[in-house]
Length: 68
Image (cartoon, rainbow, N blue to C red):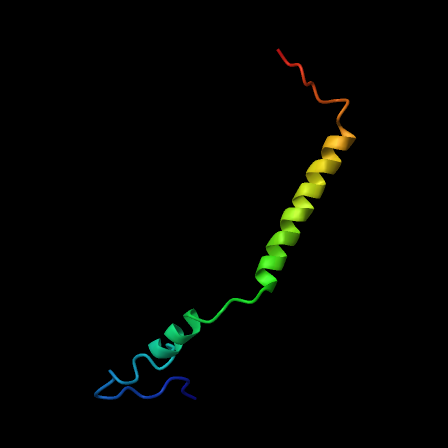
């Protein structure tokens, strides 16, 4: 049982069979990105800010504000 096709005398046309066509790749670059990416970033920033605030509230009395 052979998995690969038999070699041909002129193998140049079959060389890039598995590679996507360059024209199809260029068309997808100019499409507008979904708004979910901006929503996800905003959500992550909000979670980070919330964690920072909760940490400051929890350890406010422990933080040495006058370190000299």
